[in-house]
Amino acid sequence: MLAKTPVNETSFLDELFDRGLLIETGVDGLYGRSGLFEAIGDGFQALVSRYGAADKAEVVRFPPAMARSVFEQSGYMKSFPQLAGTVHCFCGNPADHVSLLQTIEQKGDWTEGQKASDVVLTPAACYPLYPTAAKRGDLPAEGRLYDLLSYCFRHEPSKDPARQQFFRMREYVRMGTPDQVTEFRANWLERGQKLIGDLGLPFAVDVANDPFFGRTGKMLAVNQRDQRLKFELLIPIESEENPTACLSFNYHQDHFGKTFGLTSADGEVAHTACVGFGHERVILALLKHHGTDVARWPASVRSALGL
Image 1 (cartoon, rainbow, N blue to C red):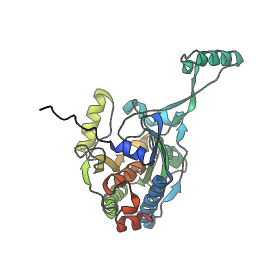
Image 2 (image 1 turned 180 degrees about the vertical axis):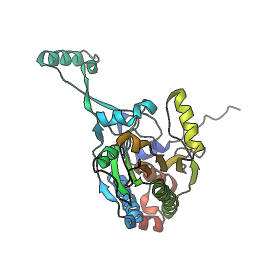
Image 3 (image 1 turned 45 degrees about the horizontal axis):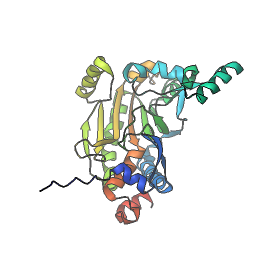
Image 4 (image 1 turned 90 degrees about the vertical axis):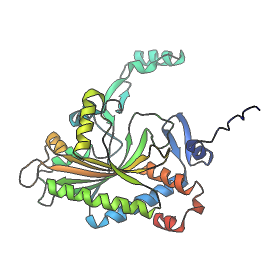
C-alpha cells in the first residue's frame, strides 16, 4: 500500500495572513497590522496602564530612532551587533545622484554610496531614556519611575510571527537605590503573572539571559543567569517546546547608571530595573490560544481588553 502524502498544515503565520490580521510586505518579520489587531493591542495597553496606574509613572514617548552618539555610548554594539539597525542616507552631489539612478536602472547595488547618519534604530524602548534622565541631575530620594512605549528594531528576520524585526515595546523603568529597583521588579513579577492570568493565557516564568554575541557573550549570559538578573514570562506561540518571552523583568544593576552618569540622591551611582511587555507578542499569544475569531473569545478576556 502506498503511503499517504502528508498534508501541509497551515502555519500560524499563514493563518494570520489569511485572516487579514497581519499583512505581508515581502520581508520576513516586517508586517502591516489590521484594525482588529490594533484594537486588541489598544486593549492590552489600557490593561497594562490600569495595572501600573497606582505607581504614577512619568509618561515619556520617544520616536523609534535615537542619536547614534547615545547608542555608541550605551555599549550595545559590544553585546548585540547582530541585532543593530543603522540609518544610512544619500549625501552626494548632483553627479552622484546621476550615478545612483544609473545603478538602480542597471539593478546594481545602489546602497554602496549611502553613508551612516546621526540616527540609529531604537533597539529597546528604554535606551534613549537614560541620558535624558541623567541631564535632570541627581534622582530624588524616592527615585524615579518612567512609562515608555516605542517601536523598536532588531535585525532577526524569521518566519516566526512572534519574532518581528519592527515591534512595539512597553516598559516601566525604575531608577533609584538597589533596594528600590529590586522591590519594583519583584512587585511587577507578581503583577505580570496576574495580568496575563486575566487574559486566560498559559504561561511559565523562568530565569533568562539576553542574546549576547560571541565567546565573551556566552560568559555574560551565564553570569546574567547565575545572578538571576533577568526573568521572562513565557507563552507558547510558535511551538510548545520553545515558548516565547512576552514579558521580561530585568535588573541592570548599576550598568546604565555608570554608563550615563545617573546618580541617586546620596550621590551614589543609581541602579535601574525595568519590566518590558512585548506588544505584538501578547496579541499573537491571544490569537494563538483563543483563536483568530475574536468574537468567540471568552467574555472575561474580551471584557479585560474592552472588546
